[in-house]
Each structure stands twice: as structure tokens, then as C-alpha cells.
Image (cartoon, rainbow, N blue to C red):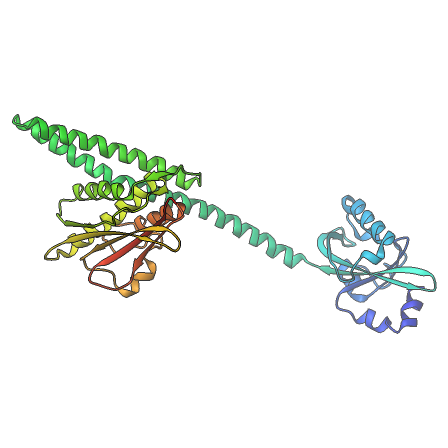
Length: 370
């Protein structure tokens, strides 16, 4: 019936010449016809597949799945789309299993229903998929290692400055005690400095853990001018290089709502960058200028921090906020990355105005209370 049916339709020559393995199966699952590609794929001699149940080509443990698939297809052939592939395991005559993709196409003639089964060997594709999955797992492991290294670098960067300050204050206090001639007020200031920096280190760790864990951070109403003065004083106290500070603060600047630690950290990083830049170039009158203004559309406060240091080379401008990119000897290139992330976590923006050297001008905006 199968041969007569194909010859009646004039498809026998196309059936035999097809590169894919083709099987003509009746409604009971009996193979009526196979082409040379199918005989070669499954390891059967010419015409030895005809008359056998199609399940002879399916491993025993997969036959129930194949049977269910075939029964659903027989019940609802109109819902099947010819050419839609289903992945299964197939079995050669000598017992070797290999992955295949099958497509089912309905055929009907003289009241009889047939199924044309197209079988494609996907061994190479599955091997490539396994290799790709293995590579992905390796990349995931490397990514986790990289993230861990980044986290360690960030923590080291954040703790370095307060620890250096603690060491400096502690050394000053020790020298005063060893000399036997010390000013109690200066000793008190040194010890207070140690305490302040230790608290700052603890705050940085808590803030970083929250940031790295992507947790929500509490916001509060802040007087931006007060935070600027506090962080500017802290930055100047941590550097031996003396700079002049110029404050151009807008009168009646609205308060902002943000996380205090986030904003303090961003301001401190910007101030440190400006002071360190001027220390490296030693301009005649090193000056750090901080200006605030109120912007109306949308309502926000802007802080602009300028220095008269060497500025940045044009080729560095697009990379300043890239992780681990730095122009400072011994730097790790995370300060600006952290600062921008902290500002953006509070619905603000941080950017560099690219006027070119001399000097640099950073701008930070934050939404105001309305």
C-alpha cells in the first residue's frame, strides 16, 4: 500500500532521493516503507525495515513516550505542523542509541491515514550543546571568582583610607606619649580621630554589604550643604597636602531625600580625587571649589566640584567610570564606579564635565523635597 500510494502521487523518486531518513508509517505504527537514508541511519539492509513496528527504532525505556506522542498525533493530526521537530532517542539495529529529531507529516489516500516520519541525526548538535553548556559552567565559575575578586577589591579600597588615617592618628598619639611631653588636647584630638575613622570604616563595610547584596537602603531628609561641609573637612584632614576650599553655596537650597552614607561616600570620593590630583601636579594655588544650585526641570539640587589639577587626557574621559580603570599610580579604579552607583541608587546622576585640562569638574544631582 505504501509503495503504491507514493507511486500514485509521483513521489517515490523524491522519497528515495531524500538526504534525510524517511519512514512511511500506517495508523497502527507499522513501517510500510523506508528510504535508503533511513536504512543507512538505522543499520538495516534494504527492505528489512518494512513490516516492522516503528518502535523497533526506539530504545525500550523511551517507547512509552514515543507511543504517547504517536497516539496524540493520530487523534489530533490537524494540530500538528509539518516540519515541527521533536527530540527523541533512536536505536540502531546493533543496539547503539543516538539522539534524533523527528517531524511528522499527515498523509491520506483512499480512506487510509499515513504518517510520513522525517528523522534527523542530531548527534553533532547535541555534542556541541553539551560542550557549550560545559563552557558556560566554566564561565559561570570564572564570573563568580571575578565577582569575588571585585568585591574584595572594593572592600580593600573602601577600608584603605580610614585605616591609613587611624594609623596616622595612632602614630601621632604614640609619639606624644613616648616623648613624655604631650598636649592633652592634641592627644584627645588624635584619639577622637581614630574613633571617627573606625566608625567610618564600619559604616563603609555596612554600606558596601548592603550595596553588593542589592538591598534597599533607607533614605532620609538631608541638608546637602551640611553634608558638603562635613565631608570636605574630613577629606582635607586626611591629606597632608593643603588645599584652599571655596564654597559657592546657593541660598535656600531645598533639602534632598537620600541615604546619608551613600551621599557622604560619593562626596568624599570626589573630594579625595580632586585633592590627590592637585597633590600630583602641585599647582601654584591648589583650590577645590564646591558650588551648589537649584535646577527646576525636574526639581533637583546640583553639586559641582572643581579643582585646578592636571585634569584628564581626552582618551581617558570615556573610561573614567569603568571598573578598575585608573589614572593614579597604585589606584584600583573603583572610587568613581562606587560613587556613581551610590548616587544612582538615590535617583541621582554623577558625571564629569569634559572641558579637558587643566582641572576637572564633577557634577552630581539629587532630587529635592517638594
